[in-house]
Image 1 (cartoon, rainbow, N blue to C red):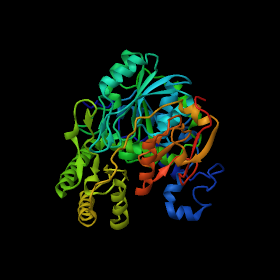
Image 2: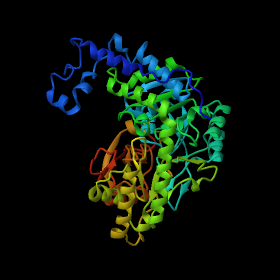
Image 3: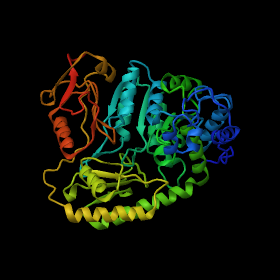
Image 4: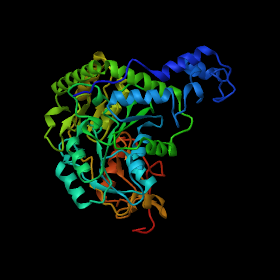
Length: 489
């Protein structure tokens, strides 16, 4: 049940202040040095005079992101009202900075945090920064699709029971593939145990505004949520919200954010958050009804092609797949004999279609407020042609997307410990001191402090051979990997 707004969501105070400022024709003797674009004509021609004219520095009429008291403060209050949160922080370092601020606000060195292992690297990066200890709840795995699912209630309850000193539970809501855990139940279990519940909602902005969506973190009673407004919400890349519930200190979170977030907040990013929040508050219900309908139509059309499996709500089992995001267009490709990344490459190289990502067995076409039905028709037609031209025997294709980690030491200890570089082939049995992942989706295959197994090396080699974009290690070719000099640190 969506809440009623308390404030006038027609307002966009940052945008309005910038419009007023632009018309004043103030003479700039401050930064940025391009001086409303006059000092960099090529940039002005590329981005447009209107755009660079509002790329300005913090000043009294425009407030200050580090300590907002006027228009930015008003934009935060409007966002909190729109999302049903006690407070909302404008984040200009992407959802990565919002996720890290959640963890740093609730965890300190030595604290335990319960979380699924299929988290984005930003979560484990936060553990490197603060020294918290991960307690992993291994997600269920769908072996047909080769993807990790949500956290089962009994597994979360077991982790809480065995780690009563943990301070927080973190949940993906949803995963990249659109799968949700039973968030209300997990929030209830965490709170009964005296723990915070944090939600990574990088892919769940629309849960707050659409109809017939899985429950949002704030509606479920979570304490904090990182919301990637630029993904499905329409704002500029790198702009996000950090939402907090009533039991979280706004002042404490602000101090944590200011440890790492820039003191030169981009007004392009902030105004895009302001305008996009207004758009979703006023029109989100109808917009996301259309997005869901497009996704359902595309799933039906792709499944009619044969060979592919565009999966959806039929997977829901009430626990590890408690709900499914109806806007997600995730397609299993392995049955046509192609890895997801191979279909991804074909779509881009031969059909000029750029999808979000392809992994070993699946592709994800990200649908949001800017998509149109005719573009989906083009995607479906391209997939049908790819099947006709490129289908082959699927024997020998790998399908596993998740490996239970063997955690030897904390991410922080491993990251900062003495280490050495060894050839990948010589690393079996050693403890990794860096990240290895395909990006997107940015879920680590290996994280600092985890043991390297033959199965993981096979996966890395296979992913490289298929053309996945591998990131993380110091060696860009991923022929070598950094390991701990000695175990146990």
